[in-house]
Length: 280
Ligand SMILES: NC(=O)c1ccc[n+]([C@@H]2O[C@H](COP(=O)([O-])OP(=O)(O)OC[C@H]3O[C@@H](n4cnc5c(N)ncnc54)[C@H](OP(=O)(O)O)[C@@H]3O)[C@@H](O)[C@H]2O)c1
View 1: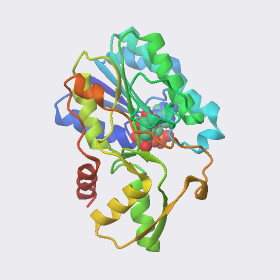
View 2: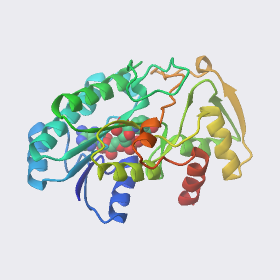
View 3: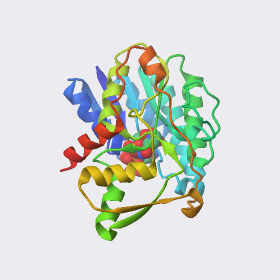
């Protein structure tokens, strides 16, 4: 298949490109330089010229804290950029897969979020990503929306890298223990995305690695697997204030993946081991 990947220089986009190449698809990666998704006429012209079978839309404004001060810019990219791609996908008859986030939920649940549960973002980033989802639904009858969470991959800035750096520098770190979720390795998410795009199983999916942990437990496991002797101190959210509120519980149910006969992502601890091996 001929596949355009937006955000191809980003953490997820790079691994998506590698996975497409592995599976012998014709992959065309675009970043802001080649295609700024906020410029509608450029997006329409580019997609119309390439006429892809699929668009894997990974580009986004992803700085959750900065989005609180820059909601307009985040909206331009996450909502209007996605609208441009949805319009272009419709014109070209291409399948669109939009990568979304657990931040569309407020985190007050006590059970994993199903794909059709009501959304209620806590902050600007979540609001703008949700607005992107709404444009996808408005412009396209058939689409893929894939919500993910706690993403880590070797091509990006992420929690694993931050922990390893701070752990080595300080020998001791403080990490919140009262926010619960599921980490996601970009390599595993990319595999899932490429499997899904080859199907007609449209709709909303939740895709993270399996298993559940707090950020504290994630950090402890990182140091254990990396063989580093670092003291990890559990903190409450109140002890570690951030500009943007985070959902306390953002575990996403992967029931739909199983129901549709798709391949679930492996356990997060196995994914972390694979990441650390890849990063060596
Ligand atoms: N990271 C997470 O923990 C997480 C969690 C849940 C969902 N997600 C979603 O997963 C997807 C991939 O995230 P990621 O971690 O790979 O993020 P990332 O590393 O920040 O990559 C995003 C890419 O989008 C590009 N981009 C931004 N504005 C653009 C524009 N106007 N036109 C074209 N490209 C633009 C960025 O380029 P610049 O560097 O030039 O800005 C960057 O290369 C996003 O949709 C994100 O919302 C991520």
